[in-house]
Image (tube, rainbow, N blue to C red; front, side):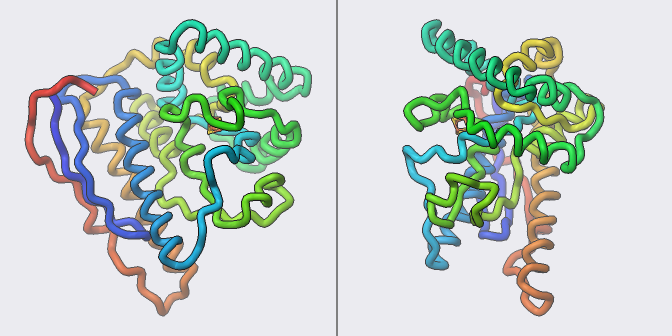
Length: 286
Ligand code: SF4
Protein backbone atom coordinates (compact mmCIF):
# COMPACT_ATOMS: atom_id res chain seq x y z
CA UNK A 1 0.00 0.00 0.00
CA UNK A 2 1.17 3.51 -0.76
CA UNK A 3 -0.04 6.92 0.26
CA UNK A 4 -0.25 9.52 -2.43
CA UNK A 5 0.59 13.13 -1.68
CA UNK A 6 0.25 16.32 -3.64
CA UNK A 7 3.30 18.40 -2.84
CA UNK A 8 3.43 22.13 -3.49
CA UNK A 9 6.69 23.98 -2.93
CA UNK A 10 7.31 27.62 -3.68
CA UNK A 11 10.89 27.97 -4.81
CA UNK A 12 12.73 31.16 -5.75
CA UNK A 13 12.45 30.06 -9.39
CA UNK A 14 8.72 29.30 -9.32
CA UNK A 15 6.12 26.97 -7.90
CA UNK A 16 6.71 23.25 -7.93
CA UNK A 17 3.62 21.04 -7.76
CA UNK A 18 3.86 17.31 -8.09
CA UNK A 19 2.35 14.05 -6.86
CA UNK A 20 4.46 11.55 -4.96
CA UNK A 21 3.78 8.14 -3.49
CA UNK A 22 5.22 6.79 -0.27
CA UNK A 23 4.63 3.32 1.22
CA UNK A 24 2.31 3.31 4.23
CA UNK A 25 4.43 0.83 6.15
CA UNK A 26 7.97 0.89 7.50
CA UNK A 27 10.68 1.50 4.91
CA UNK A 28 14.47 1.86 4.90
CA UNK A 29 15.94 5.29 4.24
CA UNK A 30 16.99 4.23 0.73
CA UNK A 31 13.32 3.96 -0.29
CA UNK A 32 12.86 7.71 0.10
CA UNK A 33 15.99 8.65 -1.87
CA UNK A 34 14.52 8.49 -5.42
CA UNK A 35 11.51 10.69 -4.65
CA UNK A 36 13.70 13.17 -2.77
CA UNK A 37 16.03 13.42 -5.74
CA UNK A 38 13.06 13.83 -8.05
CA UNK A 39 11.83 16.85 -6.08
CA UNK A 40 15.33 18.28 -6.29
CA UNK A 41 15.44 17.76 -10.04
CA UNK A 42 12.04 19.38 -10.52
CA UNK A 43 13.24 22.39 -8.50
CA UNK A 44 16.39 22.48 -10.65
CA UNK A 45 14.28 22.41 -13.79
CA UNK A 46 12.51 25.57 -12.62
CA UNK A 47 15.93 27.21 -12.27
CA UNK A 48 16.81 26.11 -15.80
CA UNK A 49 13.60 27.56 -17.20
CA UNK A 50 14.14 30.82 -15.34
CA UNK A 51 17.70 31.08 -16.67
CA UNK A 52 16.57 30.41 -20.24
CA UNK A 53 13.79 32.98 -19.92
CA UNK A 54 16.41 35.47 -18.78
CA UNK A 55 18.39 34.78 -21.96
CA UNK A 56 21.08 32.57 -20.47
CA UNK A 57 22.17 29.23 -21.89
CA UNK A 58 22.87 26.04 -19.97
CA UNK A 59 26.28 24.90 -21.16
CA UNK A 60 26.10 21.35 -19.78
CA UNK A 61 25.59 18.73 -22.48
CA UNK A 62 25.84 14.99 -22.86
CA UNK A 63 29.46 13.99 -23.42
CA UNK A 64 30.88 16.86 -21.38
CA UNK A 65 32.14 15.44 -18.11
CA UNK A 66 34.69 18.02 -17.02
CA UNK A 67 33.05 18.21 -13.60
CA UNK A 68 33.33 14.42 -13.17
CA UNK A 69 36.94 14.95 -11.99
CA UNK A 70 35.80 16.67 -8.81
CA UNK A 71 35.30 14.98 -5.48
CA UNK A 72 31.60 14.18 -5.12
CA UNK A 73 30.20 14.02 -1.57
CA UNK A 74 27.35 11.67 -0.72
CA UNK A 75 25.00 11.63 2.22
CA UNK A 76 24.62 8.36 4.12
CA UNK A 77 21.24 7.50 2.50
CA UNK A 78 22.79 8.02 -0.94
CA UNK A 79 25.76 5.79 -0.13
CA UNK A 80 23.38 3.01 0.93
CA UNK A 81 21.25 3.58 -2.20
CA UNK A 82 24.32 3.43 -4.45
CA UNK A 83 25.39 0.14 -2.91
CA UNK A 84 21.91 -1.30 -3.49
CA UNK A 85 22.05 -0.12 -7.09
CA UNK A 86 25.47 -1.62 -7.81
CA UNK A 87 24.55 -4.90 -6.13
CA UNK A 88 21.62 -5.47 -8.47
CA UNK A 89 23.71 -4.93 -11.61
CA UNK A 90 24.64 -7.91 -13.79
CA UNK A 91 27.84 -9.56 -12.56
CA UNK A 92 30.02 -8.39 -15.46
CA UNK A 93 28.94 -4.75 -15.00
CA UNK A 94 29.43 -4.94 -11.26
CA UNK A 95 32.88 -6.49 -11.66
CA UNK A 96 33.90 -3.79 -14.11
CA UNK A 97 32.83 -1.05 -11.69
CA UNK A 98 34.47 -2.70 -8.70
CA UNK A 99 37.75 -3.04 -10.62
CA UNK A 100 37.63 0.60 -11.56
CA UNK A 101 36.89 1.58 -7.95
CA UNK A 102 39.86 -0.52 -6.88
CA UNK A 103 42.13 1.28 -9.39
CA UNK A 104 40.89 4.63 -8.11
CA UNK A 105 41.58 3.57 -4.53
CA UNK A 106 45.15 2.62 -5.53
CA UNK A 107 45.73 6.02 -7.11
CA UNK A 108 44.32 7.82 -4.08
CA UNK A 109 46.45 5.73 -1.72
CA UNK A 110 49.58 6.51 -3.75
CA UNK A 111 48.67 10.21 -3.56
CA UNK A 112 48.20 9.95 0.21
CA UNK A 113 44.56 10.94 -0.05
CA UNK A 114 42.66 7.74 0.70
CA UNK A 115 43.20 7.85 4.47
CA UNK A 116 42.30 11.53 4.59
CA UNK A 117 39.06 10.81 2.72
CA UNK A 118 38.37 7.91 5.02
CA UNK A 119 38.77 10.15 8.04
CA UNK A 120 36.18 12.52 6.56
CA UNK A 121 33.76 9.64 5.97
CA UNK A 122 34.15 8.10 9.42
CA UNK A 123 34.49 11.07 11.72
CA UNK A 124 31.66 11.64 14.17
CA UNK A 125 32.14 15.41 14.17
CA UNK A 126 31.09 17.96 11.53
CA UNK A 127 34.03 18.65 9.20
CA UNK A 128 34.52 22.40 8.67
CA UNK A 129 35.10 23.82 5.19
CA UNK A 130 38.64 24.82 6.14
CA UNK A 131 39.48 21.13 6.50
CA UNK A 132 37.56 20.01 3.43
CA UNK A 133 38.88 22.62 1.00
CA UNK A 134 42.49 21.39 0.87
CA UNK A 135 41.29 17.80 0.45
CA UNK A 136 38.96 18.81 -2.38
CA UNK A 137 41.76 20.76 -4.08
CA UNK A 138 44.28 17.92 -3.76
CA UNK A 139 41.75 15.49 -5.20
CA UNK A 140 40.84 17.78 -8.10
CA UNK A 141 44.53 18.39 -8.85
CA UNK A 142 44.86 14.68 -9.66
CA UNK A 143 42.09 14.95 -12.30
CA UNK A 144 41.06 11.36 -11.63
CA UNK A 145 37.99 10.53 -13.72
CA UNK A 146 35.08 9.38 -11.58
CA UNK A 147 35.15 5.57 -11.41
CA UNK A 148 31.58 5.57 -12.73
CA UNK A 149 32.54 7.57 -15.84
CA UNK A 150 32.65 5.69 -19.16
CA UNK A 151 33.42 7.36 -22.49
CA UNK A 152 32.81 10.72 -20.79
CA UNK A 153 29.30 9.63 -19.80
CA UNK A 154 27.89 8.64 -16.44
CA UNK A 155 27.39 4.87 -16.34
CA UNK A 156 25.09 5.07 -13.30
CA UNK A 157 23.02 7.94 -14.63
CA UNK A 158 19.73 7.06 -12.91
CA UNK A 159 21.55 6.40 -9.62
CA UNK A 160 24.04 9.26 -9.71
CA UNK A 161 24.35 11.33 -6.53
CA UNK A 162 22.33 14.49 -5.98
CA UNK A 163 25.51 16.59 -6.07
CA UNK A 164 26.09 15.48 -9.68
CA UNK A 165 22.51 16.40 -10.65
CA UNK A 166 22.77 19.85 -9.10
CA UNK A 167 25.80 21.18 -10.93
CA UNK A 168 24.68 23.04 -14.05
CA UNK A 169 26.58 26.01 -15.41
CA UNK A 170 25.76 28.98 -17.60
CA UNK A 171 29.38 29.98 -18.19
CA UNK A 172 31.14 28.65 -21.32
CA UNK A 173 31.79 24.89 -21.07
CA UNK A 174 35.53 25.28 -21.69
CA UNK A 175 35.88 27.12 -18.36
CA UNK A 176 34.94 23.87 -16.60
CA UNK A 177 38.33 22.40 -17.60
CA UNK A 178 39.68 24.16 -14.52
CA UNK A 179 36.91 24.84 -12.07
CA UNK A 180 39.30 26.22 -9.47
CA UNK A 181 41.07 28.85 -11.58
CA UNK A 182 38.26 29.83 -13.97
CA UNK A 183 35.18 31.92 -13.16
CA UNK A 184 32.55 29.22 -13.56
CA UNK A 185 28.93 30.32 -13.07
CA UNK A 186 26.72 27.59 -11.62
CA UNK A 187 22.95 27.78 -11.61
CA UNK A 188 21.60 28.53 -8.13
CA UNK A 189 20.51 25.48 -6.15
CA UNK A 190 17.67 26.20 -3.75
CA UNK A 191 17.54 22.72 -2.17
CA UNK A 192 20.73 20.72 -1.62
CA UNK A 193 19.28 17.22 -1.72
CA UNK A 194 22.39 15.49 -0.39
CA UNK A 195 22.44 17.84 2.60
CA UNK A 196 18.72 17.32 3.19
CA UNK A 197 19.08 13.53 3.15
CA UNK A 198 22.10 13.83 5.41
CA UNK A 199 20.24 16.01 7.91
CA UNK A 200 17.27 13.63 7.99
CA UNK A 201 19.60 10.68 8.54
CA UNK A 202 21.42 12.57 11.28
CA UNK A 203 18.13 13.34 13.06
CA UNK A 204 16.91 9.75 12.74
CA UNK A 205 20.10 8.23 14.11
CA UNK A 206 21.31 11.04 16.39
CA UNK A 207 24.51 11.29 14.40
CA UNK A 208 26.21 14.29 12.76
CA UNK A 209 25.67 14.79 9.02
CA UNK A 210 28.39 12.88 7.20
CA UNK A 211 30.03 13.46 3.85
CA UNK A 212 31.09 10.26 2.16
CA UNK A 213 33.44 10.70 -0.81
CA UNK A 214 32.03 8.91 -3.86
CA UNK A 215 35.07 6.69 -4.55
CA UNK A 216 34.66 5.03 -1.14
CA UNK A 217 30.88 5.06 -0.87
CA UNK A 218 30.42 1.34 -1.57
CA UNK A 219 33.07 0.32 0.96
CA UNK A 220 31.60 2.67 3.53
CA UNK A 221 28.06 1.38 2.95
CA UNK A 222 29.25 -2.20 3.30
CA UNK A 223 30.96 -1.45 6.61
CA UNK A 224 27.76 0.16 7.89
CA UNK A 225 25.34 -2.32 6.42
CA UNK A 226 23.53 -2.96 9.72
CA UNK A 227 22.49 0.69 9.86
CA UNK A 228 21.04 0.53 6.37
CA UNK A 229 18.53 -2.11 7.51
CA UNK A 230 16.74 0.18 9.95
CA UNK A 231 13.21 1.22 8.95
CA UNK A 232 10.81 4.06 9.72
CA UNK A 233 7.21 4.86 8.70
CA UNK A 234 7.23 6.15 5.12
CA UNK A 235 5.06 9.19 5.84
CA UNK A 236 7.29 10.16 8.75
CA UNK A 237 10.36 10.09 6.49
CA UNK A 238 8.54 12.21 3.94
CA UNK A 239 7.57 14.73 6.64
CA UNK A 240 11.19 15.09 7.66
CA UNK A 241 12.36 15.45 4.07
CA UNK A 242 9.78 18.18 3.40
CA UNK A 243 10.54 19.99 6.66
CA UNK A 244 14.17 20.23 5.64
CA UNK A 245 13.25 21.27 2.10
CA UNK A 246 11.17 24.12 3.47
CA UNK A 247 14.10 25.22 5.61
CA UNK A 248 16.41 25.25 2.60
CA UNK A 249 13.84 27.10 0.49
CA UNK A 250 13.28 29.65 3.22
CA UNK A 251 17.03 30.29 3.32
CA UNK A 252 17.17 30.48 -0.49
CA UNK A 253 14.43 33.15 -0.53
CA UNK A 254 16.28 35.12 2.12
CA UNK A 255 19.60 34.86 0.26
CA UNK A 256 18.14 35.94 -3.06
CA UNK A 257 16.17 38.74 -1.51
CA UNK A 258 19.46 39.96 -0.05
CA UNK A 259 21.21 39.56 -3.40
CA UNK A 260 18.54 41.58 -5.20
CA UNK A 261 18.58 44.41 -2.71
CA UNK A 262 16.20 45.21 0.11
CA UNK A 263 13.78 47.20 -2.01
CA UNK A 264 12.87 44.33 -4.30
CA UNK A 265 10.46 41.64 -3.24
CA UNK A 266 10.83 38.01 -4.18
CA UNK A 267 7.61 37.02 -5.96
CA UNK A 268 6.35 34.22 -3.76
CA UNK A 269 6.43 33.28 -0.10
CA UNK A 270 7.55 29.84 0.88
CA UNK A 271 5.27 29.96 3.93
CA UNK A 272 2.61 28.74 1.54
CA UNK A 273 4.54 25.53 1.00
CA UNK A 274 2.43 22.57 1.84
CA UNK A 275 1.92 18.88 1.62
CA UNK A 276 -1.59 17.60 1.01
CA UNK A 277 -2.54 14.00 1.50
CA UNK A 278 -4.67 13.09 -1.53
CA UNK A 279 -5.70 9.48 -1.23
CA UNK A 280 -4.52 6.03 -0.41
CA UNK A 281 -4.24 3.60 -3.23
CA UNK A 282 -3.16 -0.01 -3.39
CA UNK A 283 0.13 -0.40 -5.16
CA UNK A 284 3.48 -2.04 -4.86
CA UNK A 285 5.96 -0.56 -2.46
CA UNK A 286 8.70 1.84 -3.53
S1 SF4 B 1 28.54 9.68 -10.63
FE1 SF4 B 1 28.27 10.07 -12.81
S2 SF4 B 1 27.77 12.27 -12.97
FE2 SF4 B 1 28.63 11.92 -10.91
S3 SF4 B 1 30.84 12.37 -11.09
FE3 SF4 B 1 30.57 10.17 -11.46
S4 SF4 B 1 30.35 9.91 -13.67
FE4 SF4 B 1 30.03 12.09 -13.18
